[in-house]
Length: 254
View 1 (tube, rainbow, N blue to C red):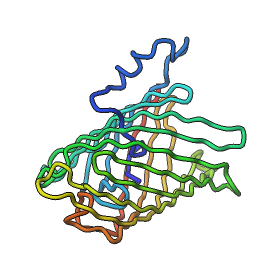
View 2: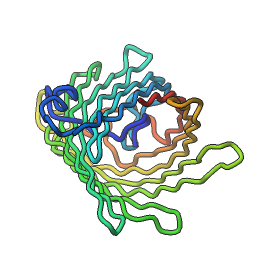
View 3: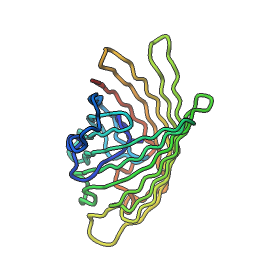
View 4: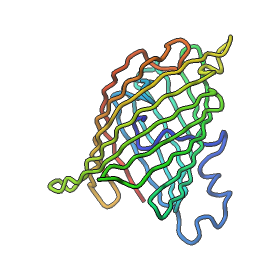
């Protein structure tokens, strides 16, 4: 997955999180939603195995209430020649008594600085099933469809959290593998549609550490590799693969 505090979710075009909340009177009952803000440094920004930018500053904000959440997230590379990204996202999670959680999501992304302006925005919907933990391991299966890129992505993940009792923290581990097929990876570029399919896999280790009542620091080490991707017809990104990068972030919750 992409580095940063949120999964790569997006939301409806032109819809702000504030407007979404204001449009649903009574949704929050008598209790305001929990809020969270994240600021981080990433030595690379990698999305589904493809490096989209090098060293970057990332920031996001999220509101959570019961089973609903919505937020905004951005990646701003240090180099002006690399693409920047901003997305809005909303999601709803329903949980069963058997420990199964189903999350439906929509997201909308805007891009700038992509060579040739082949992609200016994308709109994606997703469904993620997270199953009950087995021997401490939590499996999940996700499917995403991007309506602008005409792309379908399927991903499996396996997560585990290990208590670091001596340090008062947790080690969060996650391994993933997936594949994507798209019929129009560069919808804003002139000419015929560009079709391509590729696979990716990787893993990450993160250690969030609480430093105050409403603040924490997270250190992360990530690895991802993509195979079979066409640099011309596939999703935009740098040519590098076997990506290894680190992240350092601060989170504030209210």
